[in-house]
Amino acid sequence: MNIIETNKLTKSYGKARGIVDVSMQVKEGEIFGFIGPNGAGKSTTIRTLLSLIYPTSGSAKIFSKDCIKYGADIRRDIGYLPSEVFYYDNMKVINLLKYSASFYNKDCTKRIHEIAEIMELDLNKKIDDLSFGNKKKVGIVQGLLHEPKLIILDEPTGGLDPLMQQRFFELIREENKKGTTVFFSSHILDEVQKMCDRVAIIKEGQIIKTESIESMRQDNYKKFRVEATDRLSKDIFTIDSITDLKLEENKASFIYKGDINVIVDKLRVLQLTNLLVEEPTLEEIFMYYYQKEA
Image (cartoon, rainbow, N blue to C red; front, side):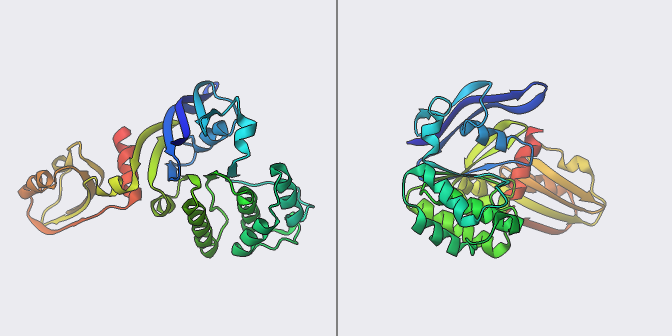
């Protein structure tokens, strides 16, 4: 079953770019990554899914229901953590969270205290007295207090120190083990690599690739570092399967995708003094996709 399903979802802002023909499916129970640099269209997609803004064309469904027509019903089963959180400064944290819980017609008191303890959040402080990181913790508790079926995270770790980031990831994994679906939007590729089952890569408002993390790692990408006795020419490396080429006198590094024998045969013309072949990081693979599209 698909928890999220979009079909050619488009949002235009006049002359400004939004998103164009975004089509994707997020399966029940998976942690789905939505990756791209800032300004690629991640937040616009999320706001459209939540019917906070309306699409120009195309469609989006959550729980098999149209996001616009049934937006109010759908949001009751969604936990949403935006990239930036804003609250009434004079409210105490506990009062804010109790107010949020009142929308769900269930007693969330125990849940609030459990998550606050995990995230080391002082419930008795005023919002105005909190740091940016602690305000983000409030957002985490607020997004999870009603035990949603779908969690949507938009750049969720901004402001959290490394320890709190780790606790947050563990918390999300525990929710996922219970069957909760997670939509994880981020430009921090290391986070996505650790957390997600599949990823969609978005560039300039369009999805350019959807693939499993495992496939991305095993899709025969290799990172080469070459050192030769003589100065290296760029002409040797002008083949479609090479990206991220860096040349410096007699040294070169690049990402290669394809039959490794082809590139090794091409390097035979060089008098090599050193050759290193290793697995690229997810970030380097990500840049491969971006450069190939460019």
